[in-house]
Image (cartoon, rainbow, N blue to C red; front, side):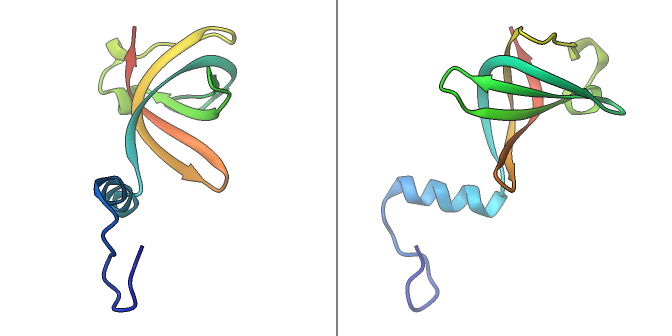
Length: 103
């Protein structure tokens, strides 16, 4: 996506959005899926979620990331979760820092 002069080559709005996401290293997204496993942490937990299209995400759900204890919820394995937050990758894994639990 970069020309010989080091400047981005224009390929339309779609590619501009991809370049912008790469600059931020994260993107906001909503995911829905079934809780496969839960690993408890200091301020919350990480839930492994399999979406309806078969993708796996590791969703970090914690009070600090949600903003208050009232917004926090502990899911159980097998439950459906509808979550919103920031997507990022670690190696080959997809991660979501949850900012809002959607009902």
